Length: 123
Image (cartoon, rainbow, N blue to C red; front, top):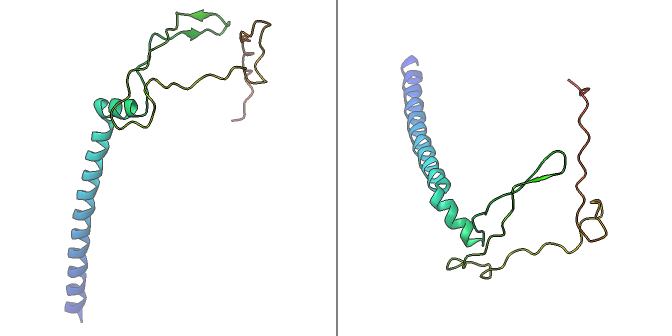
């Protein structure tokens, strides 16, 4: 009876070792696939296929509402072959700001600095 139990345990151990090897190989394969997809050139290709273009010089809004830097509009590059986006098609901004954003008479959006947070949060 003891030999049978040892034999059965040995078979189970062998099966689990094979399963561990198979799962380790699968994990390594998936990690390699993630590395290929996360590579900068692969990300750029997928972004261009979606109609994205590299950004220009950004502008930053300060806490007091001032703008630092001069934003530049980027021109859309021709779409990559097989792209579903039309060449040069960029999303158009809505003509009106959302209702909760205050605007001036000439249509410019008014930047209102947020009030500083008070310390009294739950812990």
